[in-house]
Image 1 (cartoon, one colour):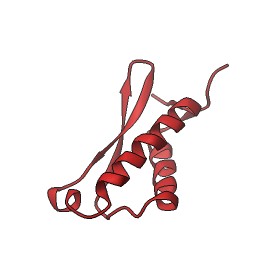
Image 2 (cartoon, one colour):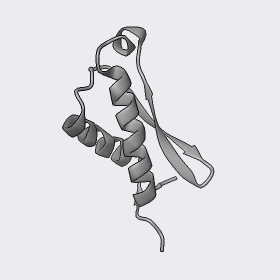
Image 3 (cartoon, rainbow, N blue to C red):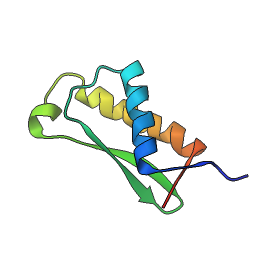
Image 4 (cartoon, rainbow, N blue to C red):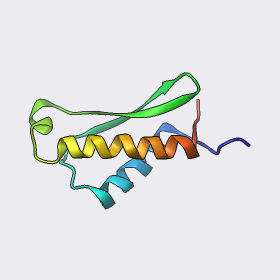
Length: 78
């Protein structure tokens, strides 16, 4: 059984929506999708000021969990 295919923009939008529900993330965090072999994962990046804000590490950890969940449900459209 094949998984539904989503674009990077669709996957990032899904992650942002999930983060808004589960975490209070600081503004300035960028999310990208990294393809790895036959799967994919999210990566967070931000400037030093954003990284130093309260809640940033928790948001990154939550993003990893969201990525694990979504990568089991969706493939990345090439």
